[in-house]
Each structure stands twice: as structure tokens, then as C-alpha cells.
Amino acid sequence: MNLTDRIVVVTGAAGGIGAALSRRFAAEGAAAVVVADLDPEAADAVAEGIGPVAHAIALDVTDEEQVRDLVADTEERYGRIDLFCANAGVTTGGGVEVDDAGWDRAWRVNVLAHVYSSRAVLPGMLARGGGHLLHTCSAAGVLTAVGDAAYTATKHASVGFAEWLAITYRDRGIRVSALCPQGVDTPMLADGLAEGHLGARVVAASGAVLTPDQVAEAAVAGLAEERFLILPHPEVADYARRRAEDPDGWQAGMRKLVRRLTR
Ligand SMILES: NC(=O)c1ccc[n+]([C@@H]2O[C@H](COP(=O)([O-])OP(=O)(O)OC[C@H]3O[C@@H](n4cnc5c(N)ncnc54)[C@H](O)[C@@H]3O)[C@@H](O)[C@H]2O)c1
Image (cartoon, rainbow, N blue to C red; front, side, top):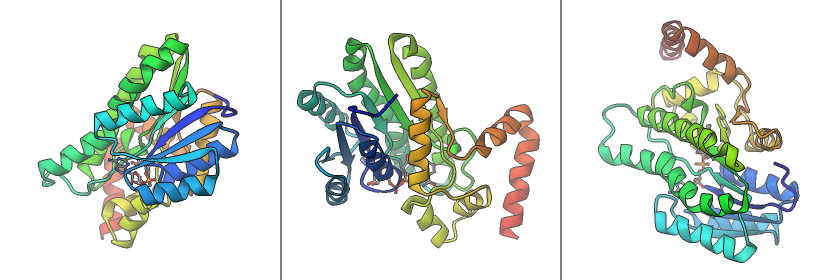
């Protein structure tokens, strides 16, 4: 997908990766960028920074009615949505002890919200014969987020759902991409590093921490090539290959890394 004259929606766009995607899509010539986020003031600031092609919408992606309204209002205003980026995501931190409310939040934001937006946007895209879904998953969805069980499980589910969409709809004109970065310098990772969380330290020890702009760069390149798996950290492909070929050996390597960091 070439971004010129496209109508784009980005969720979780008030900061971090979503804001960088929004800015980059506008710079690539998008006709409209809808900056959607739970945080209305921050979303307004991002949209204002981009200029007249952008406008902000406050919504909670876990509320299906609000997602349906976002899609319907955008289609009414611009006639179509060419690219929908389901980017909002949350970490939980912790393991099996995390309570059901924590697991539920991770499930609703990281997975169910992708179902809601796909359900809302696909009918119009299918009727028009085309469209692109970009789902921000994570390297945690093809590997493991040490220290965060719910993030790992829900990001794996989000990659699985994106893959299902890609296989089901590709021959009907719908392109689907799963954006799977490893460490990115946003509050999500920076807060964890500042607090010394093991998971954040493992991420930082596993490869470069990219800027959100570098992730946006990789996303634009992946969209142009209509690639399913977009890996801003190319080494994630090697880790995933090793994990698939030798799961026990790969897990032993992960345990060794954790031992080294916690010694
Ligand atoms: N930062 C990383 O290292 C990293 C790595 C891999 C994947 N990711 C993924 O990238 C995506 C963006 O993360 P980020 O690093 O920019 O994080 P971030 O915390 O900086 O930004 C997330 C944004 O999502 C919004 N949001 C959260 N819940 C929402 C909801 N219910 N409805 C609407 N908006 C909501 C927040 O307000 C925030 O603006 C997430 O899906 C995350 O899992 C991040």
C-alpha cells in the first residue's frame, strides 16, 4: 500500500508508536489521519501537531459501540477507510498471580479490540474490493515477553487472529499486516526500565531499542511491500526460527539470559 491520498485510522495514537505512525502516514501524503485514543488531550495534541489532515477522536477500543461509531463516522466523513491500524495495547506485568481483571484487560485491549475493529471495517472494505488492516502485535506474539504472562498470551492471540484474517480475506482484496517490534522507546518500555522490571531488561538485552519513528519507517516499508509480518527488529526472525526449530534449546537460551540478568 502506498499512503498517498489514503484515509487512515490509528488507535492508541496519542503517544508512542501510534503517534509516530500517524505523523509518518501524514508525511507520506495520506488524505486524512484519524488519531484515536483513550486520552483526548494527548490525541488532540498529536493531531494538532500533524495539521489539517489529522483530527482526534476519543474512544476506548474495548467498547464495541465506540469502535463501530469511529468507523461509521470516518466512512461518512471521507467515504471510505483505506487503512485501519489497531495499535492500542497494554502490558500487565506479572505472571499467573495477576488477577482476572488484569487478564481481562489485556485480552480486551490486545485481542478483542482487533476483532471489534475488523468486524466494523471489513464490510465497507469488502464492498469496495480493498483495504489494509495493520495490527500492532509485538515480538512477544512470536516469542515470549519474559515477566508478563498475559501480554505474551494475548499478543500470541493477536498474531494468530491477524494471520487468520490474512488467510481468510486476502483473495477478496484485503491485506493484513502484523507489526511485531521488540523494544521501542515509548512509555510502555521506558517505565518498565525505570522501575527495573525484569521483562523490560530482557527486552533491552535482546536487541536495539528503536525509536517510534524507526518503527513507523519499518511499517511504511512493510505496507508498501504488502508483507504480513513486519519486523522492525530483523533479528526477531532469527529468534523465531530458532524457537520453531528447537523449542527446548531456545527456552534454555532464554532461561540463561534471565539468570544472567538476575544474578
Ligand atoms: N514499546 C514497546 O517496546 C513495544 C514493543 C512491541 C509492541 N508494542 C505494542 O505497540 C503498541 C503501542 O504501544 P506503545 O509502546 O506506543 O505504548 P504507549 O503506552 O506509549 O501507547 C499506547 C497508547 O494506547 C492508548 N490506549 C491504551 N488503552 C486504550 C484503549 N482501551 N482505548 C484506546 N486507546 C488506548 C494509550 O492511551 C496510549 O496512548 C501496543 O500494542 C504495544 O503492545 C510496544
